[in-house]
Image (cartoon, rainbow, N blue to C red):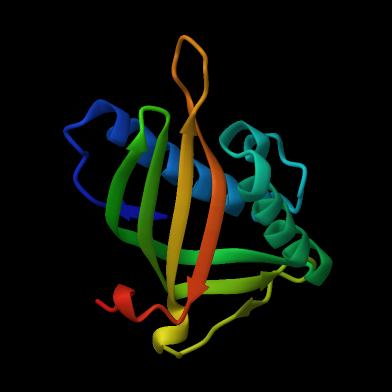
Length: 151
């Protein structure tokens, strides 16, 4: 997974963006280990974002598919809604991400570089009331065929 962006100067925005990346990594990790209850999911997400992540992972578990390849996250837009809520909108290019059968290891290669591989994530990040001020994804909206993510 490649995250391509500059770290925001605002410490809260930087922490929320880092937490958003952690959330996305936790989803891919859960798919690879084939576990919709993988502990990092609930560490980096709550509420609807956790439900989305578990559902996405379970779909892959049911199909006995993991992921392989290289996905690219880029072009974040960060909006501070309040002192404890930050919206993170970012793009993913899945052109080089492939499904891999868990049982056989067979990789399903595609040569499709269409808009279908461009995904837009809208994540609502919330700061937990802890001394460390940890951030979690609370809500996730995922849109495929995202024209705004065209490179």
